[in-house]
Structures are given as structure tokens and as C-alpha cells.
Image 1 (tube, rainbow, N blue to C red):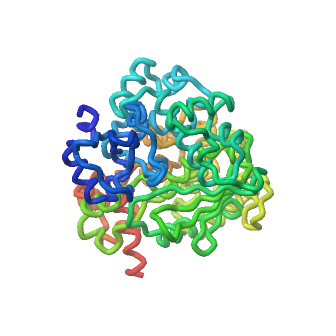
Image 2: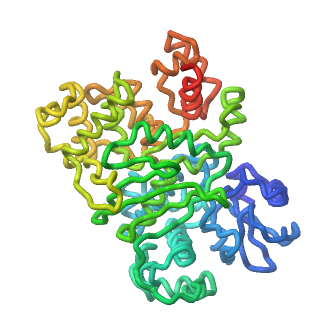
Length: 482
């Protein structure tokens, strides 16, 4: 009961959502069924159990802690996550984000607490309060659910699945999988003629409908950095690096389910966990569009499925924002392509359009201003990029989602050439903050028929806490205005 209060849902509310298989609650809570020992999503196609047989949990980890194992039909590992602004506190959301990125795969709880500048005890208390489990249990459940996904959806050998899911040994993986799910990993596998490592892996990530994929692709395609990312028809592709792993990914909508199909080169198998986390941010898959559209009212009526494009690489997106200051989208995209070709790492992929990795902060921090201005970038913007790179490379500035938004924006605005518009845009995309609002943006002013940014900001107060989505709707309206 205490756990459910965090979601402002009573068990009876949860059961009503279960009866209707309401997609808006998919991933918000899970239901444990006492007669089967299984826990499910609200959208599970199985027959709805009677009320007295159901108990409700705010996370997959808390359901598993209570002794339930995941349903093989609705597959809880495919459930979309909670919108960060909704039921979780900012610190709990930050903890979850870091764990989702694999913070406890190579590090410890103490390391994570130190990074977040809190005590171990406080970290455990926050995680227990938000998710009903300890940080280790949360990470453990995440690893097991990822392993279950890889076993079901790919041809990876079991040993590769174990390591890709963050386990340090096959023995530990097998023992925990059997203990938690009462199955051997191979029990999920269909009979196969070969267990050779495949050329690609395909995973599904879920979203809550409606989802305007075409609009999202148009936005990303217009800003795609040459050599790094591209849009081909209904597919988004990009070159990817994670630590020592290099490869590529592609994303496209499934024709059957409310999911995206994510194809990864097999070289990225050890990095599946953090890469899928970044995919979810890039495509804003945590959003609850119906709730957001209802709050925005008439502004969102025409396109209730609009998402806020996030960032796969926060430093890359922030550099792109600096290059986009006071120039057209096309001009900024051209400059970004030159910048990447000059300073990005070359990569070989089967896709001719993917030839570079975006430059890292560490690489750019060692440059001189003249090396950047030689590309046709103004000295002022070159100085801004260098200052940004050095702040990020030194650890003095974090651009990752979960960082304190106000603190990060304030720190950004101390850097040369970065003002309110850039800081708000970075908060909106790189930090995935749903309430950012660049009120000085000329497009927003045009869409609202206003010339005074103060009045624009006043109008936007009614759209809190979803002003980032309001921005997308205002920009979208300009396509009709011309």
C-alpha cells in the first residue's frame, strides 16, 4: 500500500486500469497474481484475474522481490518506463538513470553514491522508497530482464547474453536466472541449428501511443550530423561508440506492436544496456502522450503524439546547439558535418552514410581556436565549443539526464557565448527536461503572434510542467504557417 501511494494510485484504481488494459498505465505499475506466481503488465492479453488474487507493485524489481516471476506473454521487460516528472523524485530518477546506464555493473553502490554526492545510506533509502527494493536488487532485476530479452529475441550464445547483461560470470548468471525465474536460460530458447554470433541483434522497446514517428524523424533528419546519423525512409541510423565498443544502430517502428525495433551491430552486444537507455531518451519513449496532450489542451489537439527529441550523445547535441545559434537549421547542420569530419573518429559500417563517430569532449578540449575557425566556424562559437569541451572533460559540467537542471543551466550560462536560449534548448534535449522553454526563440514568438519574450513566457505558464512539449507543438504549427 505504501508503495502505491507514490503513484497516487490505490489498489482499486490499479485493478480498474487492469480491467480496461489501459496503455497509459503500462509500466507505471505491475500486477502480481497469487495463483500463478507471475507478475504482468496492465496490457497483458491473458485473462484478467479476480481482484482478490492481485497485488500491485511500482516496479518489476519490487514484484520480483515479492516472489513473482515475469510473464512470458506480456514480457514486463518491454514495458515503457515512467515519465521522469511524474511519480519519481528527481533524485530517485537520477539513481534509476545511472543504474540503467550500468553504473552498478562495473562500480559499486558506494561509487554511485559518491558520484551523486550523497551517502550510501541515503542512496539506499531513496531507492527503497521509490522502487521498493535496494539499488543492487534494482540493477539485478534490470540485468535479468535484459538477459531474458536477449534470450528471447536474439541468437546470441548464452555466455554472450550473460556478459552483455552485465554479469561477470556464466555460473552466477545461470544460478540467479534459475533462482528468480525457476527456469534455465536455455529453456527460453527455441531449438536452433547454430549458436554462432549473429551479425546483428534486434531488440524491441515499447512506447505509449499515440506516437508521431514521422514528425520525430523529420526533426532529427533535418538536424542529422553528416557521417554520424541519417534517416532512410522510416528508419533512423547512427554510428555508436560505447567505451571500447564500436558499431551502429537502426530504429524503426514495428508493424504489430507499440514498439520500436532496434537493430544493433553484434559488436555492440556488450553495450546493449546503455545503448537501449540512450535510444529511449532520443525518442522520448518514457512519455505519456495522452496525459501530456490533455494538459496542453487545444495546443496539442492536432498532434497529441508529438515527442520531444532527446540526445543520444549529450555533448554532440550541445555542440550542435552552439553551432545553431542565429543561423538556419541547414547552415548549422553543414557546420556540424564539417566539425565531425575534422575531429570525429572514423568507423567502418555496412552503411555508406555512417562513417564517423561524434567528437568527444576530451578530443575537442585539446584543440586550439584556429583549428575550429578553419572550418568556417566563427571565433566566438569556436571559443564557446572549447570552453564547453574543457568543462565537460574536466568533470566540472555534466550534460547527462538526471543532472540538476537549474545548476547545469546556470553553469552553462557562465561559459562564453551561451545564453538563455542555448541553455534551455540543452535542458530540453540533452537533459531530457520536460519543462524547458526557450522563450526568446523567434519561431515560438512567431507561432504565438508575440514579439515580447516576457509575454511569451507568461503565456507558457499554463503549460507547466510540459513546456518542452509545448515547444514542439509551436514549432510544428509553423509548418502550416509557412
